[in-house]
Image 1 (tube, each protein chain N blue to C red):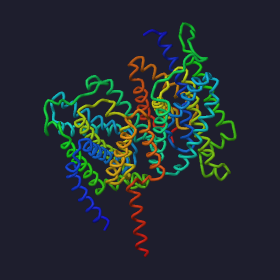
Image 2 (image 1 turned 90 degrees about the horizontal axis):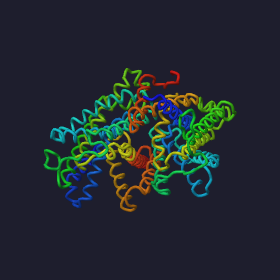
Image 3 (image 1 turned 135 degrees about the vertical axis):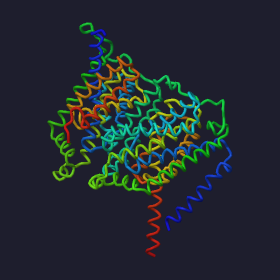
Image 4 (image 1 turned 60 degrees about the vertical axis):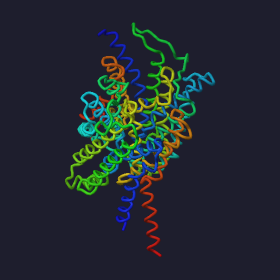
Length: 324
Length: 289
C-alpha cells in the first residue's frame, strides 16, 4: 500500500520535473530549480556516508572541489570533454576519499567530523597556493565552444536537465545500495557496530566502500557546478559552508532516506533565496542567523527531518483509522 | 639559518602555544564530561575578544582589568548555552549533537556580523604593548603577558579539577554519570559547570589575544581547529597533556611557517595531526584504551 503510493508519487514527481522548466520560464527561477536539483544531488551523495553509515563528514567539500578542479583543469589543459572529466574527477575523489577515510575512520563520532574538517582545510590551503590550478584567482571554463560536447550553454534549460539527470543517476545508485547487501551492512554499522563486527562485518572496509561511493558522486556534482558557473576558485568550491549545506539538506529532509535530500534542498534553497530577497546579500549576518536557527531547531526537535515528521503523522493517522 | 632567528621563532611558538593550550583545555573539559565536541568553541573565544574590545573602546577599560568580568560573562554564556540547547540533546543521536553546536557556531558568527559588522578591529595602546629585548631577542610584551596569563589560567583549571570538591564531582560525572548521580551529584549542574568553565577558558584566551590579534567575527575558526588538534595530541580530557601539546603545536606552526611559508601554517599543523593519529590514535600523551 505504502510502496504503491510512493511509486505513483515518484512517477508524478518525475513527470512534473520533466515539464517544470516549461512552466517556469523566468531564468532566475530556472536557476533556483537548478540549485535545488544540484544540492539535492550532492545531499544524496553525502547521505550515503553520513546518513546510512552514520559517519558525519563535514569535509565533503574537498571531494566537491576535487571534482570541479579535475574536470575544469582537464578541459583547459587538454580540451577533454567535461563528461569524461566528470568521471575522472569522481574516480580521483573516490581514491582520495579512501585515503582520507583510512586515516579518519580511526576516530569515532564527533572527532571523525572534526578530522574531516581538518582535511578539507588542508585541501583548501593547498589549492589556494597551487598556481598550476589558478591559485587564489581560480579557473575560468573556456567559453569559445558551446554545446553538449563541452557542457557549456547560453540558456539555463540544458543545465536543468543535466542536473536532473545527475540527480536521477545518484538516486538510482543510492537505491541500488539500499536494496543490496551493502545497504544492510551500512545500517548495521551505524546502529549496531559491535554486533556487526561480531558477525564478521569489517567495519573499516565497508566504511571505505561508503566513502568511495559518496565522494565519487559528490565530485560529479562539483564538475557540474564548474560547468554551470563557468568559474571556480577555492572560495567557491572548497569552503566549509558548502560541506555544511550538503549535510544540512539531508538532515532537514530526512537522514538515511532516499528522497530526504531532495525535500531538504527544496526547502533550504527556498529559504536561502527568500532571505536574500528580503535582507539583501550576505555580509549582514541575518542570513547566517536564520540559517543557524534552522539548524539548531531541526537538530533539537526534528532529528528525523521533514520526511520523518510526515511519516510520524501518517503513522498516527493510520493508527487512529485502525482504531475506529 | 641564523641561530638567533631560530631561537626567536621557537620561543614565539612556545608563547602562542601556551594560549592554544588554554583554548584546548576548555574544549577538553566539555568533551571529557559529556563526550560532546563543542564546534562553537572558537566563537566563545571570539566573544571574549569582542567583550575585551568593547569594554576598551567604550569605557577605556584595559583588557587586563576587564578580564575577570569577561571571564564571568563567558562562564554565564556557556552555562546558558547548556541550559537552553545542549541540555536537550545530552542523550540525542550524535548527528543532533554535532549540528546543534555547529549551528551555535554559525549563530554567534552571524550575530557578531550583524551587531558589530565584519570589520577588523584592534585594541590599540593597552597597558600591555611594545617590545622587550632579552639577550638580543625581541619579544612582544602582549605575547609574553598572554602566555603567562594562559599558564596561570590553565593551572587554575588543573587545580580546580584536581584539588577541589566541585572538581572531584566533575571528574566523577565524567567517569560515570549514573554512579555520580546516585552519589548525589546532579549531572545537569555539573554539565552546566563544564560548559561555563569551557567557555570561560576560551573567553580568557580571547581577552589575552585581544591585545595583539585582530578581532573579527570569523577569528575563532582557526583557533577551534587548532584546539581540536591540541586536544587530540594531548589525550582527551588531559590538562597537562594539553599544555605540552599546545607548546608542540605552537612550535610546529611557527617553524613550518618560517621554513615552508606562513600561508601553509594551518595546513602544516593539521597535517601533523593526521600523521600523529595515523601512528598513535590515542594521541601523543594519551594512554591506549
